[in-house]
Length: 245
Ligand code: IPE
Ligand code: IPE
Ligand code: MG
Image 1 (tube, rainbow, N blue to C red):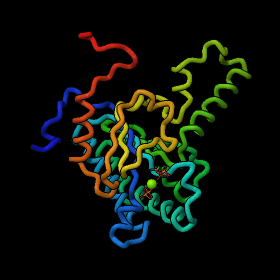
Image 2: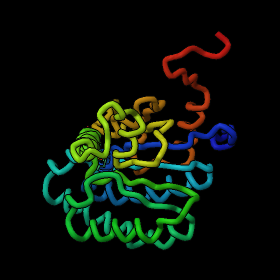
Image 3: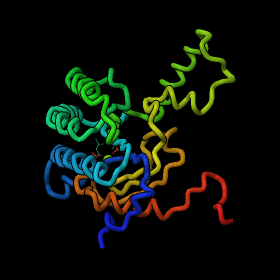
Image 4: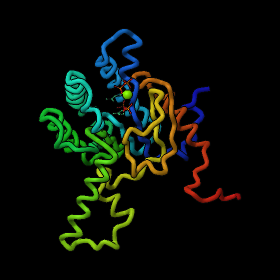
């Protein structure tokens, strides 16, 4: 039986975050350049968006480019930027028709003009949509996210608009790139590595984490369903005890 047929549709995670890793190794295994892996990774993005719509997931956040990924060779960074432009140009109308609302998490102003313009257009065009919230983390770092939130909060304190003792979880939430989006329930990392790589450090604090050796270009609805099935069989305690204990 398929995992997608074993899911409890009354207990779906509201928000799934994904570290899409393994594009380079996927390509290397085939004797192909890393960028070919990234191109196939774009198909993985298409598939997960459709899968989330089909499985009735409300939000998905995809880690596409980290603040640390600028360290890669210039041609790989340039190729990734071009792929992002291509992705938005090709997909945006279809995403809009499906009712997908695109948001970018990260420092958009730090992107080159081309990808920045496409990202802004995608956000504007899909702003009112409500079927699936697709958050793409580009030029995103969990620490940078927390720092920019703290800076905004400090400015409000300095201007007398906020009292220090009123700073709480909700105030932090409201100043992060993900303001208004509930925290992820499930975080998936493909590609076999078992680390966070600076992804949603604040927001993932109580996410259930699921790792797989599957490389991102091979990701599909069955892999997603396996992760969700596993999630549905976990016991989320949030530091407390199970109700029957
Ligand atoms: C993830 O794949 C995509 C990005 C980080 C942009 P990688 O490029 O990290 O692939 P591996 O980890 O080298 O296989
Ligand atoms: C994490 O993958 C970033 C993205 C998927 C965008 P990396 O491949 O950059 O992470 P590390 O370097 O293995 O930690
Ligand atoms: Mg990697």
